[in-house]
Length: 150
Ligand SMILES: [Zn+2]
Image (cartoon, rainbow, N blue to C red; front, side, top):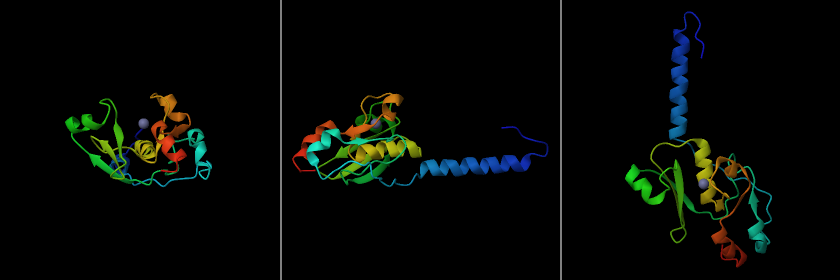
């Protein structure tokens, strides 16, 4: 950022923006689901359902779980999440809950990513590029959709 002469007001404004952005990250609000264009009437096609642009936008909510966000210490985080992850989603189907764990406030895009897991979607592969490809229904859930249990 280039500061011009008599720039004090700009610095104050910038700080204000930084604080504002930080609070947005810490208090990122829940995301709203959108339609992915899949035909859920025909549940035998569950294996073919796709969610495109899942790295940017919320997918259809297939599971309607109660979603919680928990900020935990690292030792607790490692119990649920891959240790190098920023956050992870833990689905507890019997309790009908999905908890998003992190060690600190998460960004809106991370919240969308983890929420899409809570909605029943999974990415094929772990790279950033894989995350940008269409997401699929959690493979272990497909049979439950096919049988009409989910
Ligand atoms: Zn993920």
